[in-house]
Image (tube, rainbow, N blue to C red; front, side, top):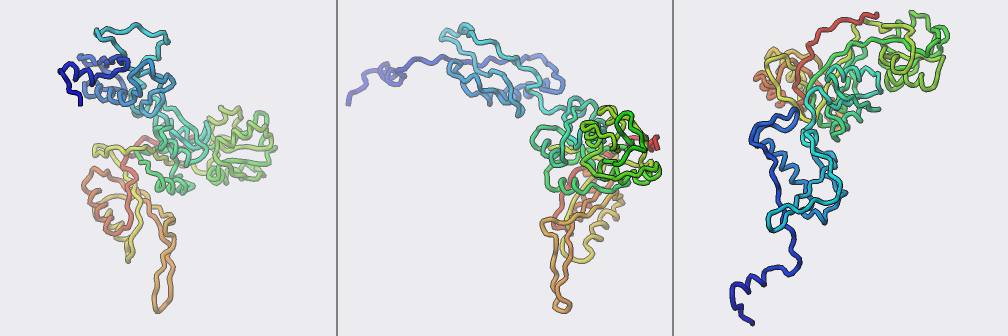
Length: 417
């Protein structure tokens, strides 16, 4: 074996024989003086370093000449046309001449900021088309938001889960029509959290194409609950019409305008009439002026419960086997002076029927239910925590859907009745 004569020769063996790769460097753009970025990166060094860490994790190549220009950095889950290649320098620590490629789009604070905060430019999903009452509820819950219409309730849930929307505003109950059972089932199926509620007075109008008179109508279309909420008023108007149900109120107005139906009217809002060019034949046709729909606001993450304002908490549970279980669960709230505002039962889809064998009388079949309960207390309160700890002893399943501020805005009955 040939001996290595000197350290110089030893280093020459370790040195690669190919062309030398250019060295690269990362130039810090951190400024020592505090800078405030609204709705984005914080003023501290830690905030800026966190943002730089996000960017540096997306660098796919350090060699500008061999990088793929089609790759785009993904910041906050969104594709961004920002070139994050590092700047090569020569061995004299000097920048190389700029390339002939056109300059990339400059990095803006929106590329680094997380999801928008409450209100401005928040993407809010709702079920229906523009002009629906759900759109009005979304605007009341989040003023100046970007409303995203969805054709189904489940699509609104999925829009939030897939980061297409930041929030969803969906109805859960109406003062006349009762609960919207579909959304209660979806609350259990999906892992979104209730972060707020909003109550919206419902003001129905009878809409038709311009020039159409009420006596020419043969059909009225709308959402099933809207039809039931205006049943008596339609009879008082002397309309001999058939009632047909559609998916939503504003969709009924859109359908009439699109198909130029002159023998059909829709029950919808006055805003729907403006959007689709319809005239209002009758205003405020709901049977009861106290017609209010309660909506819940859904998000991917829960909010931190507080005690400085009225809070409401929503839970769902399945009771365990035994006697008087539901009474024991409700007693946990009564003993602590916690007011229940709602209790709703839905079939237990995983186990809809429970069989109980008795040697004397045979086999008994009991329906199994999931119970949804709303109570006026914050999860930050000790009494609420103790109540749920006791409830958990009598239930086979317990989940907190959300602890959120109550809607305390003043409400007045519809003025068009």
